[in-house]
Image (cartoon, rainbow, N blue to C red; front, side):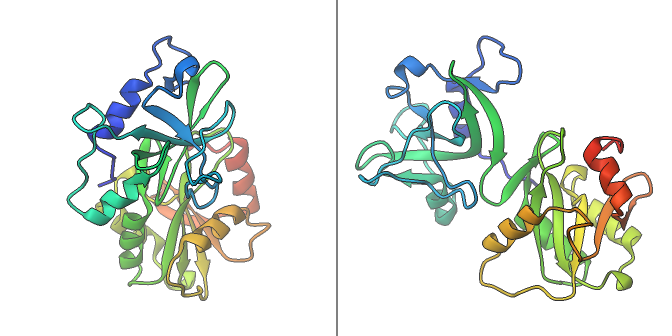
Amino acid sequence: MMKNDTSLAINLLSFAVNIFGEVGAVGFLPRHCDKLYPVTLIKVDPETHEVIRNEKGLCIRCKPGEPGELVGKIIRNAMNSFDGYANQNDTKKKIVQNCFEKGDMAFLSGDILLMDELGYLYFVDRTGDTFRWRGENVSTGEVENVLSTALGHVSCVVYGVEIPNVEGKAGMGAVQADPKGIDFSELYQNLSKRLPPFAIPLFLRMFEEMEETGTYKLKKVAYQKEGYNPEQISDPIFFLDAKQKTYIPLTKELYSDIVTGKYKL
């Protein structure tokens, strides 16, 4: 159900295998020949994940300590060639033109990584409309469709939020609905029938009315920044209690237990 970038993404990572077994690293790039290597990290906007270009209109390679998106130069008739998806729009989203030089192309992996001074790579985040939780990629669009349908086709957006000392980002949904009219146990049952456990939102934020826009990208960024602290947000927030198989109000005490690790996720 959750979308993975197919064989080319695997091929990109094969170029960056953590051959020395550095703890925590997901790969390694030889820094002494990085400009000759077909795989590298390029700078992207931290919020929109749009590619950042220099004055020549080319992508900018990341320096050690700078997070960036892993890309692979597309070389025809080679292991890292990319023939595209059946959907041409999806293909366009995964290719960046004029990456290292005019006329070339590179494949966007969707992974934000950070490289240290030695060349070891560390996972940071996923780009676009996905986030990573429990070691899995979660498609926000698919979760939005399921959540909206389960609540009677209401307006909603889904995004990932950070929990201190927990790997990845937990799912959170911002929903236009009155919590008084929701059977949260039934909602959980509906979600669990259509979503794998890792994709079910951990938090729900209820709005009386959500602003309707053509795209939810900026709205997601704003909501994501606001987080889920009930003392800083006036909207009702609910938390998924997996043991009770329902959503419960997120109190300041429960929030404290979650962020301090007292509540085991």
